[in-house]
Every structure is written in C-alpha cells, then in structure tokens.
Image 1 (tube, helix red, strand yellow):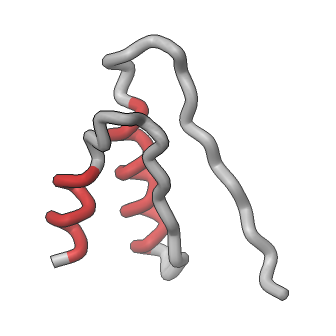
Image 2: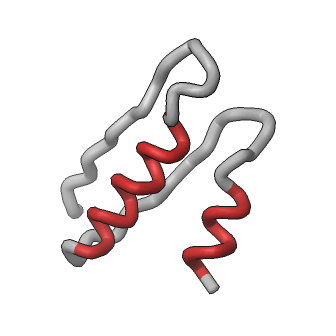
Image 3: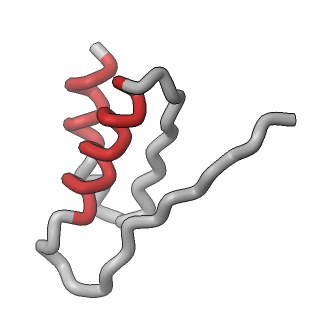
Length: 56
C-alpha cells in the first residue's frame, strides 16, 4: 500500500485564500509528478470552476 499524505488548509474566516492556496499547492505537486487530490468541503463549491479549467 502506498503512503498517503494529507494536507489541510483550514481557517474559520472567509476570504483568506484557502481555496487559492490549496489549488496552487495541488498544481505545484502535480508539476513534481505527484497525483494530488482536492476535496473542497465548503458548501459554495468555489473551487469547481478551477477544477474544470485545469482538467480540460
């Protein structure tokens, strides 16, 4: 079984670039050959447009 690392970007305050930080981290890891997975648990799903942009 492969080792899995979990990185959480958390803050109770809105507008502190949590989604931007998480997505940029994922893009950076993908650039190094990793296979990052992104899970946005916020009800507004504000990362959905980014996912569609990077996956097309």
